Image 1 (cartoon, helix red, strand yellow):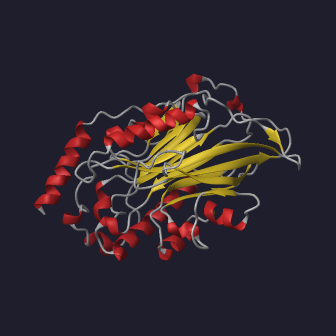
Image 2 (cartoon, helix red, strand yellow):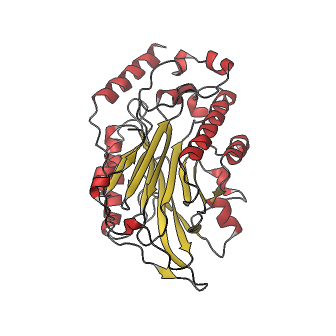
Image 3 (cartoon, helix red, strand yellow):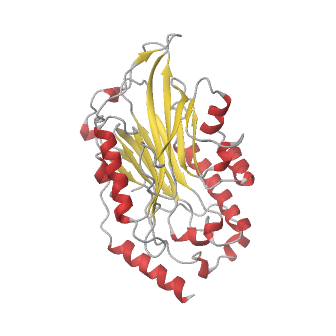
Length: 366
């Protein structure tokens, strides 16, 4: 017990004293190379959008030691890729729990670098079972304060016109995961030439064994969070807009978690799409078995909008020790390139021109 209390005090002190970078917004697209608009054989117009999800393992001491140099290298690698014109358009990071991890965004040069929920951004408690709340254990971190932020961070060269962030409810967590303000974040981006904004949602959900409580208890917390995520999307996602989801969902080799999540949030999993449509989606990474989506924590999913359709056309690993970056975390990055397509020559998004900077960004939770 003393060791847990001492470690918690150290993390709280570090979180309180750290200097965190300010969120950064840019009104105009600034990528080294903007995606070209092309015409497909069937007459549709199209462009591409690449999204990387990456758990950077930015945990504080004593949970991890000497992570600083690797975190700095992640930022430098992304900066180098941007200079070469081959960086992802959007990066969704998880576990940026330290200020040094959050500064990855400063190193990369992306025009927009936006942090996820803070400790003050927690949602109101949902309908969490009374028994689940009563069984909270102080030694497992379930009754104490949130010591860390959500760890979510979004980088984008495309303009972000709206942003919403919210932590999971305080009681909708289990074990040591309760020490962090894990939660959800949605950004709305405009891509030059595309006639609709794109909604992008990211999250990091309750772990399993790493939470150091029973799998039954951590699984129940995971279900509460899936329901909260579904409610969040119902409230803030605009159905007319295409939707892309990415994050660390902590569902690896757990069919129960996966089935509950897929029922609550019924969008198309990229791994499954690429298995079923090999002629459309190029797989440039190693997959084992018939259900590769069950072999990873890191997933992306998508849904079409009313005007713009979305389809994955390539998946590959990053930061896996290949020429896509050295392995600098306990996760590999998962990069998906999507084709965005639409019919006709209708009015394009007003934000393909440089928007009026005075308009600002709609920020619901700050």
